[in-house]
Length: 164
Image (tube, rainbow, N blue to C red; front, side):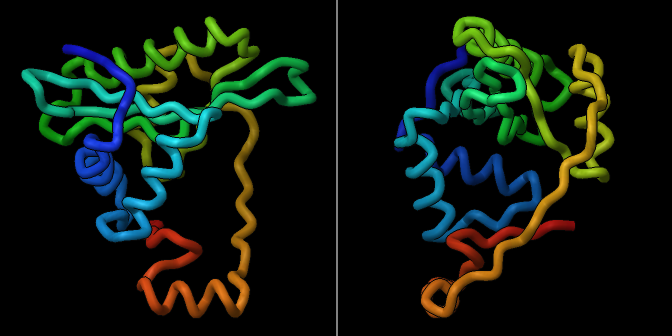
């Protein structure tokens, strides 16, 4: 298995994998979002390849946080192709992200995970993560201009997401 930084040519594979997390990203907004993440210097997306095929990804960002007085690496997505799960791909991707956190002087690595993703919770806990706090989300209502753009492109806030 080879882990490498994602490039624009990987976007179809990235979207295919992110869709396995129940997000509807197979559209123009999804492609634009993936391009924005790949172009953002605070973000990184790594892909795992087996025999030349992308089988997993980890996407994260690193930002300084006042309460840690240090940078924090936040895992945004970690997904392994359904047929490849349980074979060590996720562990290798997580290790690559944690290695980057250490190299960047991060105080912690954090991840948020929906309540129903119990298999993911067990995965993270098996790798030393501990339950800490609760994540609260405030949906932002789009402006009238954003609503018109969403209607034109069939998206919500630039992305079409399904949250079970």
